[in-house]
Length: 314
Image (cartoon, rainbow, N blue to C red; front, side):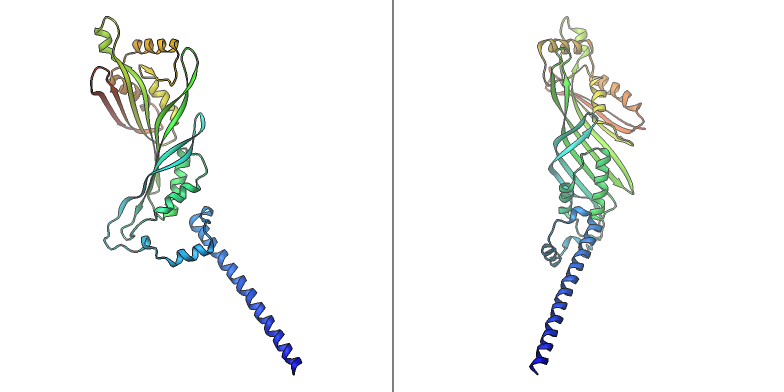
């Protein structure tokens, strides 16, 4: 009898061992399926949590996804003023900068809220340098992640360009305020570029009525473009600076200072002249569907600015 008892005991041990192995196999299969589902819904970048964390999340109520009974859709909801380091790809190459981002999506009338953390997660996963095309890809990814059919991303940042002084040839950086945005609605993507260009303007009237000299000042020309194809930041800078009384430089020697002073004097521009001359160039570019163009001259002889705006649509 003891012999039979040992046989039965060994058989029970084998059965228990098989059940334990199968349980582990089933658990491993469950984990694989769960991760595959997360990849399908959110992309590979979503695999950032352990299974224990996932179980904890599943146990917590998802209030944002609950039903809202007020029946009012929200045009844009998301995050604003997220400061984040990015890389910019432009005509002159790639540069690093720090952007302020606004990321929003459309929220249906029956959904209580959006998932705010997913916007930040998208930026944490972002590896490619920003460009108009890359921003559109990021916007499409945002809509898929937030399960929305409309949304917008805007990124504002300082953009630096190396300038060469006109006489000495010394090189220095000059900064410009730039914004890129992409909006997708009804399956169509619209891109826009916003650039603020500092320049010099010299008053034609002051030159005409004075025996010598003329008042001049720094001006800000703001260009907002809505395009059907990418327009490079440097293109906008060249268009604007080419129509100013004179362009600005980060560093000048005395021969350069003499040159820019005389250049502005030989090329006087009213604020009206500035916007009209730039508008003529913008209207000739088929990539530009519409633009808003403004110039503000910070008058050196007044405590107010001279200001002009042109809005145009093809």
